[in-house]
Image 1 (cartoon, rainbow, N blue to C red):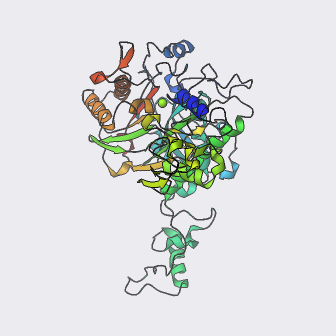
Image 2: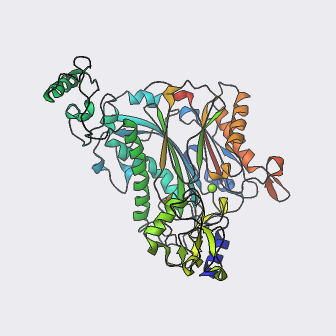
Image 3: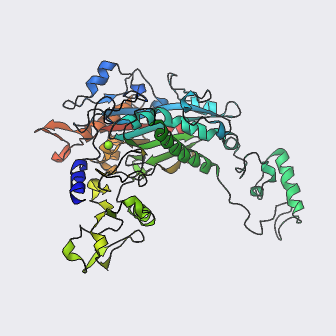
Length: 525
Ligand code: MG
């Protein structure tokens, strides 16, 4: 076991390595590719340009061409790694997408890209204004803006597939709640199809028209013209808890969460018939009805820079940040550890000669440390081992949430990583209508290649100072700022290494960056 783990640790010190090749590895699968390797569609690169972009020595920074536009004049730039994998395993997507009312059960489980109601709008020259106009458009329709970054590992298959399909899973999930979301006066019914005016949530609310009459009728049926001391006609407060009140915003969060799960399930299903290699992290931003919903599963990151203030919009999921969840899973289902790992954490590997001695440890219930008497069981390899970027789960992988990886096992064993690797995102919400945003207020999304070498503060200062020196009317300024960020993180080639300011090492990883100006979301939907 120890030899196996040593070998695995050595193999994965730089992260899960890709086998390379056009298929992104996969051990020479005979199955057809689900999607061919590509760079983001919106870059509009030729095959030759894509090939040139994979030059690990030159590492050219790719940017959105000036003639091309993304919604909200979003900026984008990317660069390939310094040789970690043959292909750039980051992927990106940016679209304006429409969801039409339809019961969620009608969503085809495997081919959402072919649903007739999931219409992509990115072919339009510029998405600005489109979303808001359409949000007010036909009843039963919702349009949302969508940006996403995927960071692949052990092959590019899962990242490419997720970059093509995840937005359609979000459409499928939203279709079931389009009507509810378009009526902000009503609370979401607990059961779809239930009349809102029969709903106990309406107590205290003042719905318009016939619903107000129904509310008054409902109040009188409860046997009271109003609570003691309350204004005449005011419905009485409920005497006891009847149902949880669900906010509209929670429906969008739930739709995004379920879309991630559906995407992951689709990858698992279609691996039976396609060559879909590896796994990927996923960071998505959805703009819908005045709010940004940032969903994150992995170690990419997004921050908002508003008036030079930094507002974190995601948190990384790593073996260290998720230690207690992972340890709890190992404790509850010890068979997942294959009798080779222990769910306990010790400050270092326990040696046989230390059995019987008292040693510091912690389990899933603890954030601090305590002493325990070392037993034979504690000689097993720790479920979580290492620190910072070198921390690994099951000596294999350094990220704990993402899509794919269904076949990933501990080296030379039958222990699967997937139960510990969750596809569930954390979704944070930012209400764009609460603030007046200027032209330099932006949301920055980046894969870990950016954040490994630049802090939030460094990114914020770089973007703020760069934009301050640009013509505020130049719509290409956000792409130029993204290019500047990628350049700062990649650095320049010197003494056979990539160096950034103060002679620090530059990022050798793939780096992808969106810069999204926020002023376009200030209009009240
Ligand atoms: Mg990366």
